[in-house]
Length: 419
Image (cartoon, rainbow, N blue to C red; front, side, top):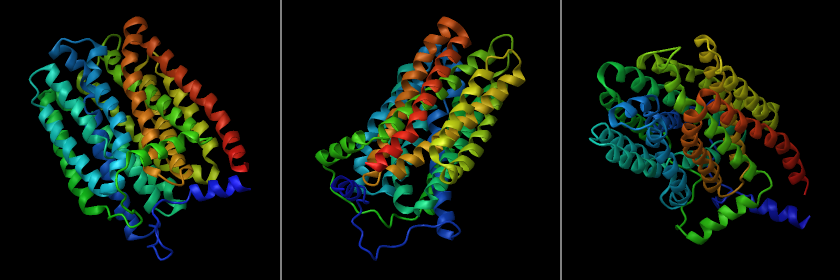
């Protein structure tokens, strides 16, 4: 009994808000609409700027005379630095506030992307992409913390799903713009256009997102930050969700990093613009995150999460086909499954972490983007050694492991709740 009481006290929100604190944001209100539009714009900008280089990795190979694995560093270095810096930035947001940190993140990342469009050499481009990882680190985990603090608890799944939907549309737009326009005007003009789009999203975010009402600033203290991380790592459920993030994002990015190389080569021999158009399947991810995030609250997160992982796995296997239509279907299916699983997992983290939500989100996203960096680059070795079959073997294996872990999550959470 004493342990249950201690756990309950530890999981109380850290805001220290009095009983007269403002109410949470609820669905059906103008404030809910504004908040989610602002978060949508933030998610859009983050992923559009982060992954705008993905469809043009083959063009980097040609212009800078680098191989596929080295070309993938334009993305992997960004996500690696992003993963590491989020651990610090989540603590910084506890001192400076959620919205100011997110605003600075969007505008800094947009300006660095604009500079990247003029990068004369491969090392300079990689340097700018590395700095961009630092800039973007102020958004994903902080946005998850904002949702956890400001939204009415029953609407967290819906809000998180809408935020992830914004990342899906941003990922689609960034990839489509660079993938298609690079074929006609060159990748530099295409990337510059995405940077301008990021600035517009930043302005919309600043105007739409309400300031935090349940946030209480605290001095940045390294000891308290480490204590929060240790607390979450001792939780019975959260560490497994963090690992799931690594497996999910690693497999997803590896597929998207090297599918362009496959489709540009025989037997498909598509043009760069045609490969870019395939990223329109991101709409499947938008639908998946928006619907499955809300469904998880009604049907149970473990059940919906397992279903999303199995859909992801089915899509990966379909990409083995030699028929273009089936390959595109496979990409759409795995995209749906990935975004659905990510929306459920990220919302699950927010619900499970009763306190220090920014740190819980940072740990999840640390492994999430670490998976993007590590598996995204390792996938190049599998591509070089065994072709597309090697990439599929790697990514399918990761998702199978994720399904096995998910099978135990429901029992672990139920057992933890009863302790």
